[in-house]
Image: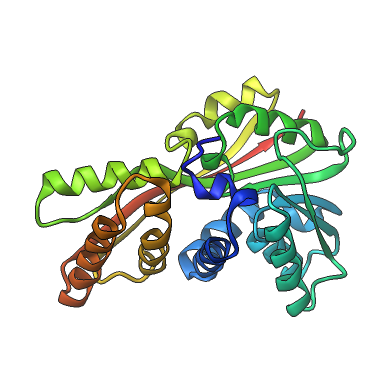
Length: 271
């Protein structure tokens, strides 16, 4: 994993930075754009027919599955960070979902779970934060039953860009930010190759572009979280990061903001 990627090293973060990450994940997960992208690939997976589902992260996708009206199964969420697992369990308890979901700490590249234990496996905003995505896809293929579905969703962060009055400086900022917050910024472009390498069949793909012009809405929480996370990575100083973030927020207030990134959802089946 990239040691500068805070999302990949949540087991090593202090409480304040963990709070920043959780706040960012939850705010993003509740945005209508993200909710639609999640539901698109869950529908394609026919997730409501699954009785056992494996998920990950702070529980955004895990809880979304448990909340679905026609879903009657059980969801297990795995994350590298025990602290994040605890937060996810608290969120599930607060939503009255504790009986339908459970969370455990573990490494998604190698889990102590039986072969074919799940009807479906979800990797939601995970692969961009690991340095060996194929190992995660192969582990998902091992854990899902024959005929079961795998859903993978993440950003194509090599495409993430923000406007700036000086295009050259804007590009330099983009490069620094991508290097600081993700480990595998091009992994979603590799998925058509990774699935067959893991013995899986690609069933469906969902391409999106999230672009805001004029005013920041979707991107505003990201800018606030980057303000804290980027200096910790060493990619930019605190002064430089604040100048970048303040400039984008001024652009938003003035109606001249630009921020965009591609996102992709994939559904595969284990033969």
